[in-house]
Image 1 (cartoon, rainbow, N blue to C red):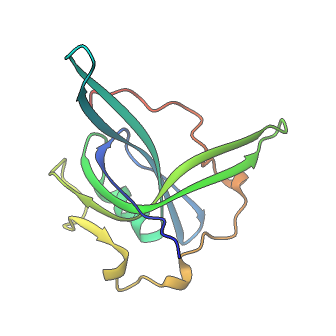
Image 2 (image 1 turned 120 degrees about the vertical axis):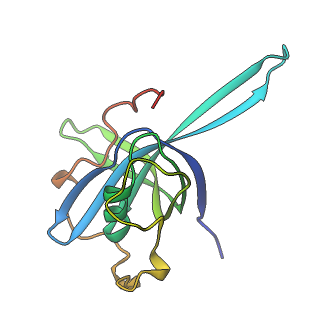
Image 3 (image 1 turned 135 degrees about the vertical axis):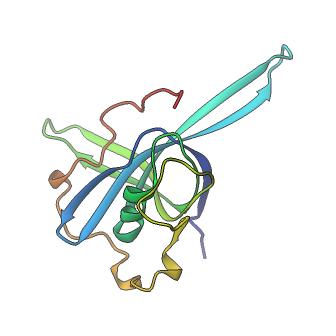
Length: 155
């Protein structure tokens, strides 16, 4: 048996980008920054920021669209996934992403469109585990790859 489980707490680097590869299937992408601060060999403080590519589907994506904004601190549970594709020039590319299943806002931000503070697919009455797989759409229908660098903080 194996486990593919990721838990991240960080700040959104940009507003979620929403696409609908099929009429009833939402896809959201955004970046998440996690920070680590530690003492270096000279005794000074060093801060390291790691950027994560986040992808979510269906109701999780709709929650992200309505409730998440750049700069918000959020908690994400999901799984790590690496995808490969070949571009128009024949070059093989790959990207490692976090596929978010549960999202919790950890702070108040600008007013959201709903009153929910989090999204958990297990408590969603419309959640259907048979729909967990991605829809059959060509990757060329939408750009999932992170073609542009994540913008820098401050928020």
